[in-house]
Image (cartoon, rainbow, N blue to C red; front, side, top):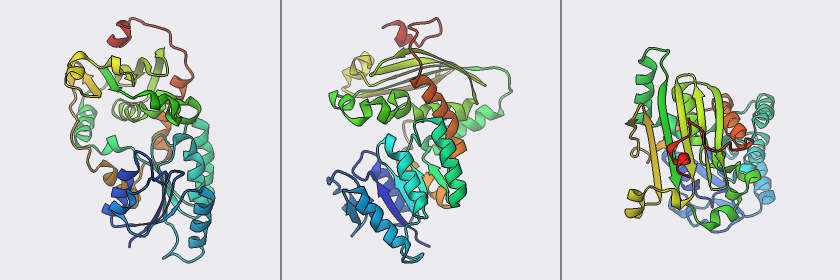
Length: 316
């Protein structure tokens, strides 16, 4: 049976992936909210969506639908708002009797998960998040391969992710650590979750660089030693990438071998939605380890270059 969805942050960057997933899984969007009214994207996916620029009116409308029976009520709230609002909007979803599907990062602090866990149990509803790299075909195959190998020997992993951003980034909420969680949370959370999923729990963590545009460090995981480097600084792009006028560089190597997963991203959100609707969504405990790690990185001071630093750090 088709489910009714509401969405917060519908004017944001990631919202179209959620709109597509809602449509492609055969469901209906009945309400949307965003402080910005630049939301013409709605017409590409749905007709006659009730739209609100004030959350209070959105809240009132969804509450009204709740009282009109199961056919009319909102069954799922998709949370695509800025990171610091995720916690509040998840709580809103549970309060109106809906399950939540929240973009990463689910929350900014580990203790927020504890509070949501209590509310989840009290409400009987489910909090789900989007961990799309876990449903990427190439990475699923890689995990199977890694899991089949003998335990004991750690892999050497190098993660480099540079996605150049202009001055706007630091002025927007994304550049405000208390609202975005900083680079490790806003950009790195995808990769930290992937690394923990592939190579096991964090044993130790070092932060060598911690700036508004760049952060880098070293992780000891159960089955890997990881040098990582995250940046939004265009000057960090390798010369070959700059020469081709590309704005993003992503590289992950395992024991010197490049892991290629550039393709296959088209329908990952839809795949996560499908498994969520089937009752197999990624929940609070799935996301906890990466939230803890990103929080610890955010609270750490960079030590400067170390022998185990990423090569880009040594060049700074």
